[in-house]
Length: 448
Image 1 (cartoon, helix red, strand yellow):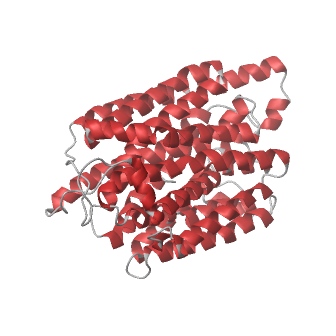
Image 2 (image 1 turned 120 degrees about the vertical axis):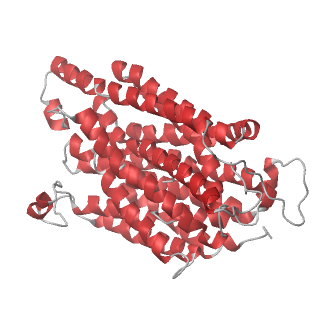
Image 3 (image 1 turned 135 degrees about the horizontal axis):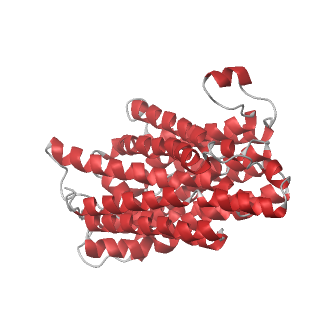
């Protein structure tokens, strides 16, 4: 992730405060994106348990969330055009709060369809927030260092991803014992139903609290000092009506949207499906629900590496190329690694308070490092030279987030019909396409 219509400012901010204040506010939003988004990694194995789901059904939790980005990107873009970016982001926070409240009836009834509705509403709110913030960050400074600015935002985004599963485990799974699949199977049907109802009810208070916090932040956003921004009209472009069809004349943008499609798909598989692989390896539900934090830790390390090296030592496109290559290598290691042995001994892990984790699961976490530079690099490479089409181009890129709705269920299908470990093969074609975009696709200025 990605986690993520704004346009170019009329002029580059001159005073330091004119940059620092908006960046600080946007940074807070990126933390919210990350926290809400990467709760899915803990939520998926949790819902698989309380709703008796297959791997394919469990990954629909991610699909419902990311499908909202595709279905609602353009409607949300039009809302932003009418309300302005600041009010649009406030509306986004209110919508996410509504989505959090829908978790309450879903939890009390253990209705999987209502959980999916809640996920879609949350994703809809984040669509406004993401569509506005990413181009804004890109345009706040020189284009060659845009990936660095997004990396800084990403540190908060993925840092929240580290925290979210831990908070979920502390608030939802605390005090609940006997929730492994083996232990649940040993209970009578009545006792099992009582235990699952008890576990599901643990969702209510945290999501009520989340809704309240998001609503308060929405009110605060209405008064936040974020300046209005407009699309820059480049030489050769004319003022006037800007139609969505116009963005398709930019190959590097269209190919970039497809690169984001594949990137978000593999990012979600690495961050959200790691818990399913942990359960396949025999880890408990509580441990499996926290595994997303491992992936996020490596993503944070990747973002830090990007801040240090770009553009001083490597370019944005070079970073993207290395990310794709590492993704292929680590995916192969996931598919061939052991689900029994560990990278470090259990004794060593216990010194850090960490459970014993199989090799293959660690390599899934390492995919977080490989994925880290994809989002920060693809955005500036895709938006370069769009001028007045920047806002519509950003909406098209946001639609690419649909990869998080499409690829994870494909992984889940192969995990159900074969092996959850070998199912990671679906990531290989995605990384190969990202590699193509890094080498050639971002340079294409004509379809001829």
